[in-house]
Image (cartoon, rainbow, N blue to C red; front, side, top):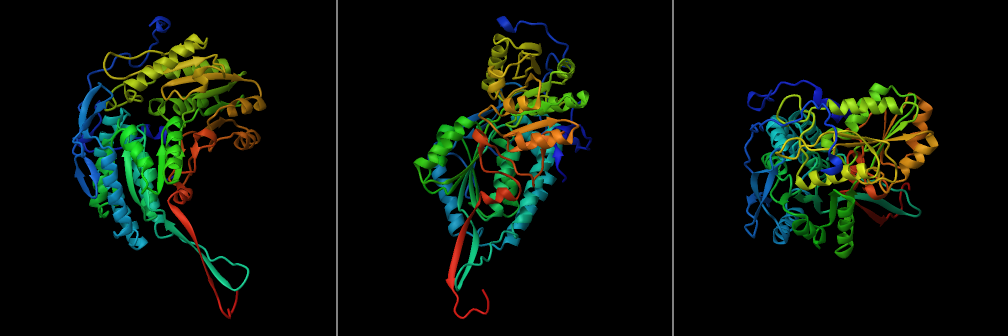
Length: 533
């Protein structure tokens, strides 16, 4: 699968199986814009059942030791989808013990790499076979449009596992020339038991980013899923068992961060942690490593990414790209282009067209055809976004459109656009994680580079220009782990992803992602009477 801009693919056509077919206060009191959807119709019944809601430990689906469960909520309605086993420290201890046994005594790390590769490829085939059921479950639990899940995210998950299956039998060390009569070689060994914590905004993709390279390298895994979205990981993990993964190699513990998550981070028999989530929680994960056994840590954290529209840009194209850079996945993206910098000569035209595009964005049930934006994940995120909208208004930014909820049921928000935004406003500094576009004005490239870099984050950046010279200048000057030129959200299994500054540590995906799950051992031995050195 070629590198792709994920937000653009949801408009492509595809035939679906019949059972999964798409169905056809105060300062906030402002003029209601003409949205394509101002009320939400009754929710569509998702064409999938919840069959897996227990913990996966040592190859079996089991209840939590405590017997506790927690509800996972349908963001379209606020109603309960299912009650899921609530793992805690005792369950983490059991899962880590199973993973350690599978690593130290089980067949997985001792299996020839070609056989590991074949199991991952069989799993990819099963993902492809069950694409639409998995997509329906993901959309039900997260609120994202079904087309997005079915056409983009599940196929990308499949691609990740095929990509890393290809790497499994190509991991190799070096023979190193050294001074003196010695033979030196390096071994690239699996690191051991890997703890992984994934977020709620892209549960399946983050599952792939973490599980695929870890297994390809011969490690075992204990994963804690986000309490908001536990269902899809359990479903696909059952398919991984069906593909032939030995018991204990992958363990899934659903639960809360202050229970199962903290226990996993502090566990003395976990060799590696990988976390995706907020910068604040990432700091706690790193501190837990220091407070326990100094386990290796990779972090993919928050962002406040600039999207820079230069004066030579095609405005219509730039408006659409900037719109998708921000509003894709309901704005719930760590790399969302949430600071839209526009050159002063084209600023007014851009704002008017950005406003019109936001007003035409189709908000509705994720299972209805044509929906571009579903609900936010839960009430806490919903209220947080409304808080930032109020802050923007109070600080003097101009609310061009949106700024309020849609309907009385669920967590739907109107696509919101602010103009006249200043760098010192909260909406220009904090990660909102919602459908709120902040448009700022700039005069010169030097100025916008300085302003774009004046943030604690450094995850991604976008530049829209026709000038090769400008592109070359910006790609080197912007302090971000990914710089997209005349595109945005273009992802591929081979493209590394990670941040500068407080956006994280390390890189995921591509060959760089393997380094997170390997350790290097140097082996040195004397050589007597060598024929050569």
